[in-house]
Image (tube, rainbow, N blue to C red; front, side, top):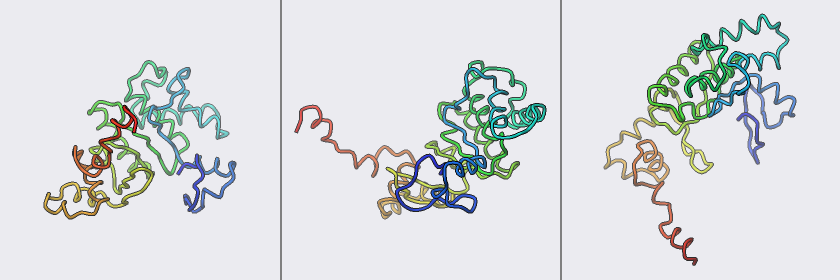
Length: 228
């Protein structure tokens, strides 16, 4: 979706154009319309939080430094880090790094925000704060948020629509309500579900038994250990 890999077939349409057919320079222009929050935050350790946020503006705009400084303060205020602008990444917590990375992703006023496991490695309270920040930014700035996560509590909090992927295949794209109904389905009705729906339900509920665990070969370890 961000154009890092070219698909073998099909198209990916963003902003009214097929990004698969764009040249690298055209794709670079399109990428300015979205921001990415990487799982680790991906901050430059030798730069302050403010300098990290300023970098996209310095690289991709002709704004004066005074204007860039104002923009940086605005973006840091949005994520609650303005008072920590002069700190290095090593001087802030994991949750603050995620918020700093988000401020940088917002630097160019994107139309779409991509989040890669935004709550990974965070305690429950900080994860909940990140979820609320995602919701707030979507409402305040009118951006579309696309979030990759395996944290179901987070997914059901922030999502309007959800897509379930399994081994590179999209099993279902539906509303949050559809997934909630599947998760909460009584056992007698769940027994009549299709295989893909049973797999989705197991993942949503975190059940130890189901299609995901059934497909693991119990003899694989023995064969690997002793040969076959």
